[in-house]
Image (tube, rainbow, N blue to C red; front, side, top):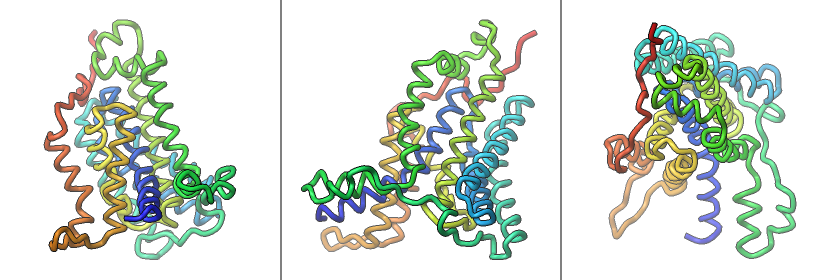
Length: 321
């Protein structure tokens, strides 16, 4: 593999890791507060459809982004209502969100646009364009450093940079603010937080809202940044992969970044190298396409060391009277 090909693979890695990273951070906030969120997939899918549909109708990608965030946050609100207010089973609620989004997006898309569950292709101001960072063209001729800056770091849409900036921001919020301390405490010992006079319900709903916003960004990026429109089931299991990455990262923001980049790299390699020859044995393209999902199964099977979730994760809290 030459240097130019390596840069192309890494560039694809960054693009493909972006929705995974945003969804993984969304799950991080939710699960740190004690709310298990299997519904990341459904929230991303709802956001992808809403952003693409509104962008197609209005011609504004920013209105599409806002619509995607609203749609995802509404889904989060439903999950919060079921799992926090009514203290229902969080896993079942998350699965229901996924089924609800899967059916509604296709139904509304077909009724609205009549294109078999798709939205019209987005063009111009209807989708996020690549941003050229300062001095990218001037430095492109510099050996090694120039191509890395001009082709790998520069040339992405704004949501890619937002996703990577969210990693240090999430770390700061969770580990350097009072809100983050309370949020983590709610996921570990909600009764202690309640005793201190802090609302457990309020903190968990705040985490749910943050989760909805981040999933909205992830879904909007899929439909208006990575691709140019919505297609049926376009999330393709990314919500579940993000959950696997979250477990792999042991619920830590910086580890989540590297876990998502690993999954993104596997997807990029699968797209770039359709058939790989290893010592006379040709690995078919189907195996390459399945690599991210195979790794997901391996991680969820527990082959990443002991990953201990927040102590109160998945347990509804009922205030003692």
